[in-house]
Length: 126
View 1 (cartoon, rainbow, N blue to C red):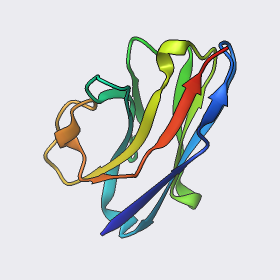
View 2: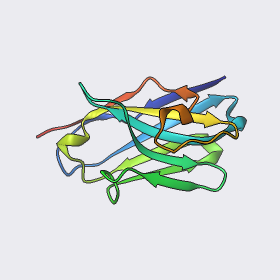
View 3: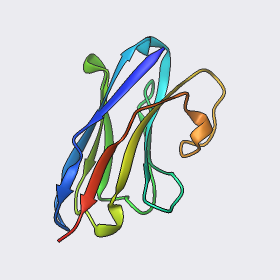
View 4: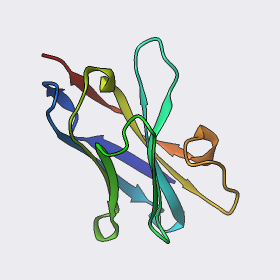
């Protein structure tokens, strides 16, 4: 089993920055991919960024490219999402996800991940 705990959410003005953290614990040795998703009220959960932890390949949704960056710290079993130039449309609950195994799907598909955190709220408003 793997547990994921997100932190770093909050309220920020447009143009501001936040850094989300996702700390993994438990059987983390088997994980080979992690991702960040978000869900706004009335909308479907969407992929924001993904990282394949072995070769450190990263992916970002078009809507956040150039503004958000996913990264990892293997020593801390933690994945980060640095969010800059935040916009009101970035307001959502942000979820961390982790996956294992050799069956791969697109990084932004929910079925690519086996474990999910509880989420952390990000609100961008003036």
